[in-house]
Image 1 (cartoon, rainbow, N blue to C red):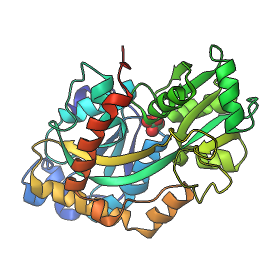
Image 2: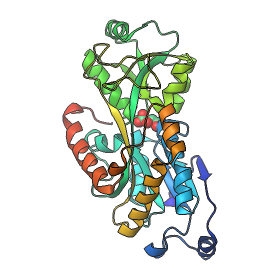
Image 3: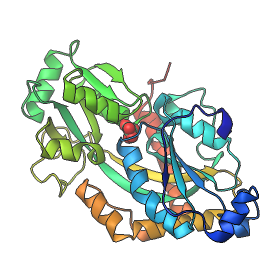
Image 4: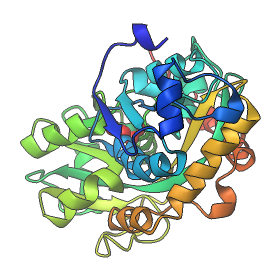
Length: 334
Ligand code: MLT
């Protein structure tokens, strides 16, 4: 699997191999006895472009996880089809714990949106644990005419055929939020898909696309530096790092409420002993004060420690796969 993957950006993070692991690696370690796991580098696959929200969350936890596990963590960005290309590749990886997927709410919408999905999010994966739930923000290019969410609604309804909105492909969180927005406004807008919301943000900043709904992990700095227009946050309460940004409910779009939950996955049949070591390393990373502080600066927080378990992650995934079907009925990737 690893050899046929299109080589994207990758980043080596953290602790070098421990002496024992170096010896094992030198002798072709990795994928050996679960009791020795890990004895080689671990790869975390990110289904969207480097620099975007999913990538940002992954890089936050990779360093402390690497310290905890005593091996390097390599982050590999594999874009495409709203995250389903990466998920499909990880589903086929060796179930040895050395290939991990970071994904979010898009894992639960994929079965509805992709009729020919080459994997089953529940049957083909083993959950490792939940990571964080990230609020979304509705933002626009700086010179976009509407000044408030109310004005945005009126402007979009009057200019439905002209307004463009960016997302990271069908099945991405930015796509999902856009669907909720269009359903709430009763419009069908021209979508501009990207490999991630990092390149989408570049076009918002450059004025090539009008607006998008993206996670605070990618928009907080741009909003606080006044580089984009910001209309609302998609949570029931305002976000501490963006105190002046009203909620969608305050702006008359109470139905547009979504937070982007993230979790780590390994291929199904990965030995329980290996999964437990990964879960424990994730839990330790999420209790690391620097991770907590970094997440807070970007409008989010680790999930509660008791939710960093495969069982809780599976429960959330099952509920979400079941619940998005109705909302997304009729929307299918070509
Ligand atoms: C999305 O689902 O919109 C992704 O979070 C975008 C990204 O991570 O680049």
